[in-house]
Length: 206
Image (cartoon, rainbow, N blue to C red; front, side):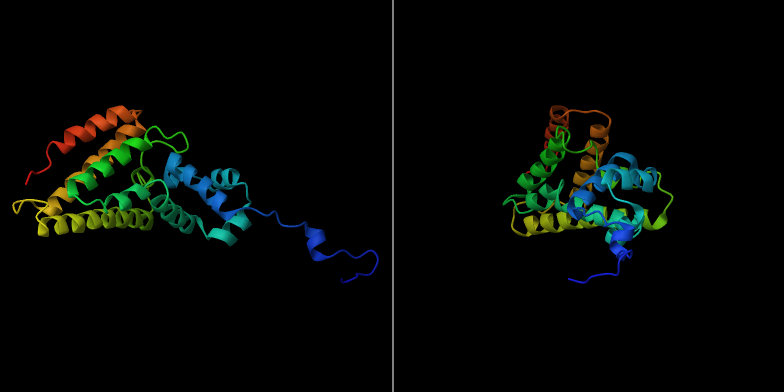
């Protein structure tokens, strides 16, 4: 133990001990703020208040606002929409697409998360070009992953030779984004499931 001369305080004691926080919990709270308010609508004050940390702690742990948003998007992909990647492992292409649609519908009734889609709402009306580009690239990556899954289905005979995997992937992602917008507007899980069922009727038959 180090003893200090009488009347002298340690630097830590003088400044006060930094408040410990759980980075995972703070990141989860930041995700909810960005999800509900969008990138530009989420101010640093909104974020630090929700995360229960001060600005120096935010910068030290997560970087600036844009870097924090990138980490939030990673958490979003690994958490609330992890069903997308799992759906691609389904043995049949139609089952994969059905699970993507129904997974999107399930999110509408989950009380733990905001409605809609962070990937759509996060960058709506965003003036930051780099943020819009990052979100667009992530959406494109999801579509590419689905397109590759459908290309494999076509090679395996799970889709007819007349099917166009790129067009089908674009169709599925357009429906998913539309469902997310409807969810943000108050559509229920059952309403979104009906949308999914209608969309599945257009799925090509072998």
